[in-house]
Image 1 (spheres, rainbow, N blue to C red):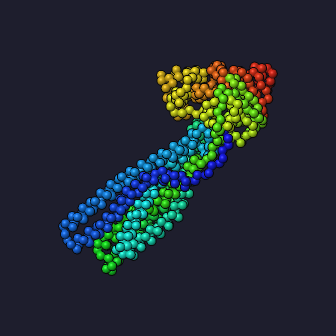
Image 2 (spheres, rainbow, N blue to C red):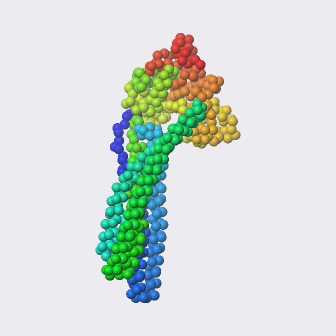
Image 3 (spheres, helix red, strand yellow):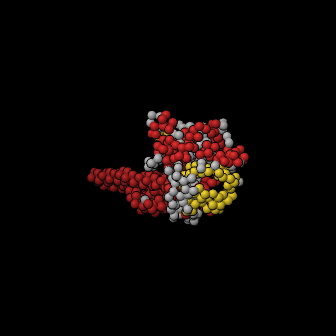
Length: 566
């Protein structure tokens, strides 16, 4: 894998355009139906005014029946168009939110990590709340257009009665939108900050849940709770700020809309009193003045929802536009390959160099924990190739030049704190259900006692993060998963720190037996694992300072004996 070129940034506006483009058909039909709904709503007071005027002139029962039938048609049109229009738009909205949730989740689950700078809890918030708010643009635009249609119809109808009334509606609508568009920018920035703080609070909760057992162990749960309360309080305060801004916005919008409606009503009354419009036109004007309150409210709310959707889209862009840590190469590793670290310099590693031949079980005793962590990170492709000097080869090919599939097929780096998922023991050990060494992995990791302890056996339900398992059981479960993968090169880091000495001895022997003929590297200070290895490499100050069998090093190297003897 090579260091990728930084891709063109994908701002929130691009994400919104993509959402609109993908749903243009649904949005067109939704706009048509919602436009019919708004047109029908607008036509109702217009028709009512015409009925009053016509009835006063002709006083005919037939004309009245015809007018009532026309009103029934208008009401039916309003009802059906709203029903089917909203069904189309909400289905498109829900589907689009699902697409973005899957897209964000896919970025988080890709084999190659991305440089998002976000914690898992923050990504979770983006994949849920932000995805939903971004998809709202699919529903917002048709409602905005349909509201505009109803206001135009109302303005034209009033303009035909009196040019002054039509201009009043148009000028008043423009003035209201101008004021509210300025206020909506504050809502967008406040909402973006609120979402960021809520995401940080979610990330803090995830971290605390992960470390709950250790926190209880040394009494740090109270300090952790205070830390979370501080982050949560910040999120609450920002939410209150957003609610306050939204309240001011909604109050201003309602007040301006009411002022416009009252102005239309008073103007129509004055024109009727002055004889410039008849009684039917007055009824129409008063009815429209009441009706336009609803489309005006929707129309004035749209800038707020657009800004909220854009703020959420920009947060999603943090994940979707983030470059991968390393771009996949195009080569495949040779099957059953060896592992070579050639003059690697990174952090505390100062020109580390060694080779593990095919089929050898090698243990690495790193005196500095940081060196162990950095070596594991490099082998797990969590460090970009350009961030370190030297070369890592698997099967004779540079790790940076291998495809993702080849890396995952030929080398597995199992962390010492491997995650446990909600499900069963079986699904945690063999998620794909294709392992041919499942039973051997269970026996080698000494997980047999956990399986035998429950009637369900391997189908025993495991809670989220393995909360119903002990620390040693979780560690053995993670080890069983690594062994069941049966990769050509397996790298384990401290796989037995949470088990007792007797179990550790048995696990060490079982790993050596099960992995016979396969390349295995264990980064550890465990005497049992060091003794089971074919060869031990001592890493001190970032370089290999000694090598040999565990027992030979115990006899000849006092520093080694002091470091690993328990």
